[in-house]
Image 1 (cartoon, rainbow, N blue to C red):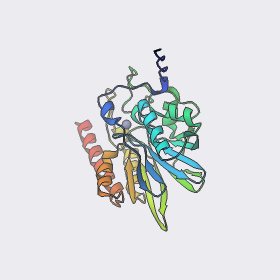
Image 2: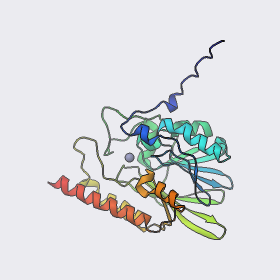
Image 3: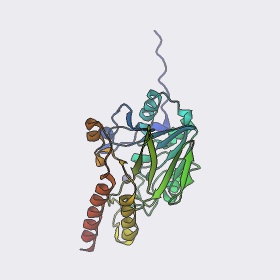
Image 4: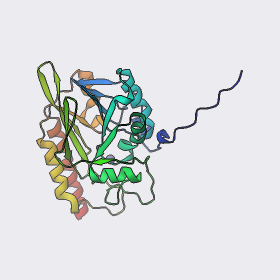
Amino acid sequence: MLALPAAAADPLTAPIECRDCQVWNQAEPPVHIYGNSYYVGVVGLSSVLIVTRDGLILLDGDLPQSAPLIEKNIRTLGHQMREVKLILVSHEHFDHVGGIAALKRDSGARVLAGADAAKALGQGHPTEADPQYDKTGKFPFPKVAGVETVTDGQAITLGDVTVTAHRTPGHTPGGTSWSWSSCEKDRCLAMVYADSLTAMSTAAGYRFAPVADSFRASIAKVRGLPCDILVSTHPTVSGFWKKMEKGSFVDPEGCRELAAGAEAALERRLVEEAR
Ligand SMILES: [Zn+2]
């Protein structure tokens, strides 16, 4: 029997190794969140699919090695990759944007992100202003050319769905949260895909104090959003899997609780920095 040649490895989905990557990247079947919205990510990294009359919107691409799992979930829901018209970005770290190059290639979708996130995607690593900027280039991700920049409050419409960009810098300079409406029969709920709001740095000597005001404003923005259903970039942060077990993702306190936790952590961090 002839041995078949091994399939050529896809450079855009070559795995990134990190402490939590294997745990995060476990496959999960797609989950119906509400109305037009589905979870298509992996166990520890969110990716949300919004179905519109004129195609699909995808929020985040997770790790490079997550892209085939996200694509499988999209196909399981009965769609094809070429139906994905827009890919929206939360923030420019390898665990949320690593898969976007492959997902863009396989769909032909436009990619939209905050300014620093767009720049980071173009160069394949975070910008120097990033709290997790790594001079040694330890966690690069596949570059994505032609990423379009969104401004705060910008409305992006595809078919019958409008998603609004909320610039929420702090965790990264390019961080963006997203909101839209999702309806079942005549009950429409406010959906929020909130970016990470954790004051966490790995760059040597990084201080949050100089960006504290804009970080606080980002947290306040998330707190103030109409928010019936919250999905965070790491699903456990907003209790996604527990809510799934309960059978409903409706949680009107979700955004306020996320903001309260983020605010407390930021203020603790600022106190530590001032010591
Ligand atoms: Zn991050």
